[in-house]
Length: 322
Ligand SMILES: NC(=O)c1ccc[n+]([C@@H]2O[C@H](COP(=O)([O-])OP(=O)(O)OC[C@H]3O[C@@H](n4cnc5c(N)ncnc54)[C@H](OP(=O)(O)O)[C@@H]3O)[C@@H](O)[C@H]2O)c1
Picture 1 (cartoon, protein in one colour):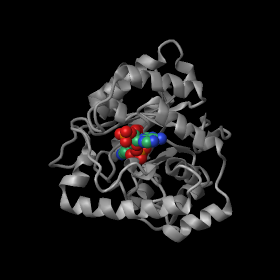
Picture 2 (cartoon, rainbow, N blue to C red; picture 1 turned 180 degrees about the horizontal axis):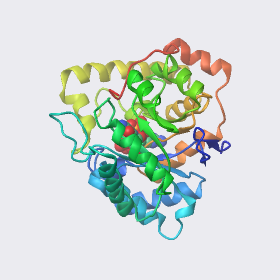
Picture 3 (cartoon, rainbow, N blue to C red; picture 1 turned 120 degrees about the vertical axis):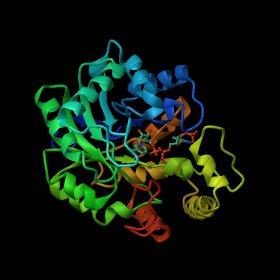
């Protein structure tokens, strides 16, 4: 595995290959099997993975509960990144239910209960656009840090004006963003900003919701309960899906000697602005392939140039809206 990297200036050092636990929540990315999910977390730990990303809202809390079960008796082996912000979000007024720092602090007690722990390593604000409760989060998170309930806090969004505002206040350590070969937009403004401010970066969308594994084609079907079904049913999304597949095909032809998923993850780990990547493996075979990509080392200059020809630096499109 690659050497551990520090998450910003938090003092938290983690293996750069992490694991995203949204899919294991079981409600959004197709059905999952809890036993298989726990085995996958066990195996991840055995392979040296130590950062696990979850949220209050994934599977209505089920993802956090599963992680809590997996951590039982060995909490110190895990670095837990969880999130808060979407439960009871007021869609009409467009703000979270955490109207005061005290409400935020109370809300985090629920994360702690589900995770069956007395501290969270990294608490991330999940609201991906500027809302009126951002200050409650920042103040509440600072109190939680001072009292030892969390070790560090950060934000999850790719909205650059919002990012600038969030980090102009408080002492946040990390930023979770969407970044991949298909979406290199962070190279323009976000990475120069995080480098300058020494903010740790957590990369989601590294496999572009599975597109960059190369396993989908125009005839792919998605199972019931898998939100990617809209790539087939919605005509605009279908058009975009076909365009993405055309780029994926170009990548496959340019790199016949390695799997696309491994190329995609090596591309991310080769960027010195990246702290951690958190692909959402659901099963042990996916996990092993992702971890193995970290062992293949950084991309060569020639490999990088071949990618640049297909998706130019700073180019591509946002896979997650924010
Ligand atoms: N707003 C936010 O804060 C936010 C948003 C999105 C994600 N996240 C975090 O980021 C994590 C990763 O999500 P993502 O959007 O970045 O997803 P991703 O990693 O780009 O794609 C995940 C999907 O790829 C498939 N997959 C993973 N490894 C594979 C492999 N080696 N071979 C084949 N398929 C593989 C998985 O199974 P199937 O294709 O079999 O389903 C999974 O559903 C989430 O778990 C979550 O923790 C956060």
